[in-house]
Image (tube, rainbow, N blue to C red; front, side, top):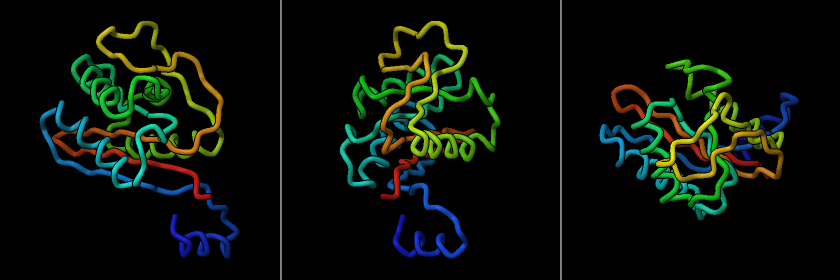
Length: 164
């Protein structure tokens, strides 16, 4: 978050919780290209190494093609050890509101140090070779990537982090 925005928050008695470090908005229709490119652009825009991302909030719609493609992209860009989960088990798929809702969840993960589990996930597809959280994890969370992939190619990856 820029200093000017942090300064603006104080007079309104609002705490500065975090900021947007990087993002990508890519209108692609080929699933495999989208996942790789979106996450890579967001990390690059934040001038970070992928290892500096503490948690990934997956788009995770529980559709085989989508989840496998997203898992492969995360493994290629972030590695297989970064904790990941989808929060749609808690919220359902809220369609047009999913992106903002999951951005709020990403900010809360940073603020509270809580990486939520993938609720109702009992078995992970062997083709998804990443660190899917099946239980909530508490820890030091500085940066979170959240992925939102919409109908017709409206897609974004945001990198959220602490302001200080």
